Amino acid sequence: MGLLDDVIGAALGSKSASGLSSPIAMALMALLASRMSASGETPQGSPGGLGALIDRFRNNGFEDAINSWIGTGQNQAISPGELRQALGQQTVEDLSQRTGLPHGDLLSQLSHVLPGVVDRLTPNGQLPSDAELLPGPR
Image 1 (cartoon, rainbow, N blue to C red):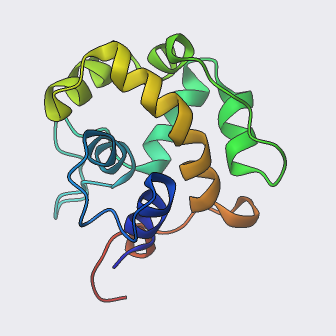
Image 2 (cartoon, rainbow, N blue to C red):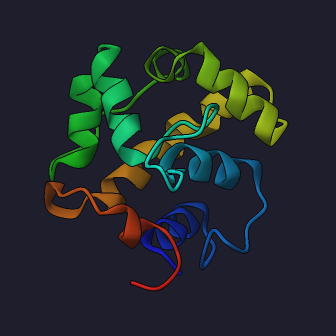
């Protein structure tokens, strides 16, 4: 079981995300799990993992928020509307289609759990490797 499973499961009140089929667990996995192909490229339609999520926040004007989640201090809150801006409309559309959740519900739920999940994935401000995040041999 990978760190990502453990953290998502803890955030959602379960032992691991792998046993969860909740729409929010699916959305978090889609956002945070790197979907690199053998060639090292991220397949089209894949958000690209934790590093790509961090880049997206920084590039869309939400560097303070994402940095607070990665850092060791208090996590800055993010509203559903701000989260939509940070993720981008296409990512919100993709996640809504994957999960079956309307945009508003998806963004509302993610705005509550995503700061804590990113915080737990980056203890002491350090990003985990893809191998640490995902299940499998390490």
